Amino acid sequence: MLKIVVCVSGGGTNLQAIIDGIDQGKITNTKISGVICNNAGAYALTRAKEHDIPAICISPKDYTDRAEFNKAFLEKVNELTPDLIVLAGFLVNIPAEMVESYANRIINIHPSLIPSFCGKGYYGLKVHEGALARGVKVTGATVHFVDDGTDTGPIILQKAVNVEEDDTPQTLQRRVMEQAEWQILPQAIDLIANGRVSVTDGKVKIINV
Ligand code: GAR
Image (cartoon, rainbow, N blue to C red; front, side, top):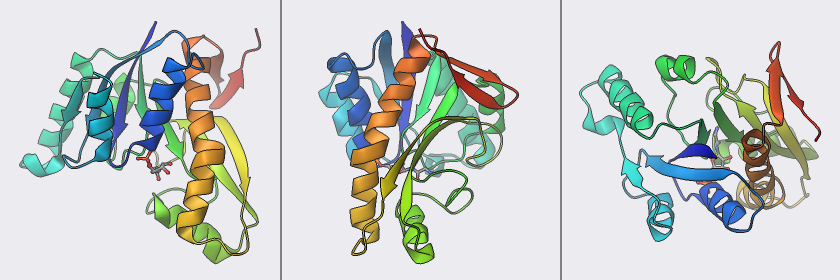
C-alpha cells in the first residue's frame, strides 16, 4: 500500500480528484495518510476533513524565518511516513533537505505542457495568462518528479488541451483541470503505487504489465 501525503494551498480540486480516484478504484494500492496545507482558510482542508483524512496546517507566517519553517514542515511530513509526497497545487518552495530525503518520491502537477509556461513565477492563473498572451493553440498539464529546480524534474505524464479563441485565463484553467489535471494526477499516482514508473538518467519509463 502506497502511503501518500498531499500538499495543497487552495481550493483542492486536484486533492478531490485523488480522493475520488481512490474511492472509485481508479487509484489502487494507495492510502492518503494526511493533507498538509500552508493556508488556514483553504477549502482543501475542508475536503480532507470531510473524508476523515488528517489535515495539518503549517504556514511560513507562523515561523520566525524560512529555515525554521522548512525544519517544521519536514518534521510534519516525516511524522506521516509517506512513500510519496504529492504536490497538488502547493505554492510553497520545497526545501532542499526534503527534495534530498525524498528523491524521486515527490511529484507535482503543473498546469502547462512543460517546458512551456513553467519555472519561477508561473503558477495558478499566471500560467494560463502566459499561454493566452503567447497565443498558443494547445496547452495542457504535466505531472513530474520534483528535483532541486522549479518544474525541472523528470516528466511522468502529460496531456494536451486545446485553447479556444474566446478563452479567458479562468475558462482555460477550468478546461485544463477538467481535461488534463484531474486525469493525469490520479493516473500517475496509480502507476507509481503499482510499481510501473522507473527513472533512468532523468527520464521516466512507464512499465507495461
Ligand atoms: C492547479 O491548476 C495546479 O495545477 C496549479 O494550481 C492549481 C491548484 O488548484 N499548480 C501550479 O500552478 C503549480 N506550479 P486546486 O487547488 O483546485 O487543485
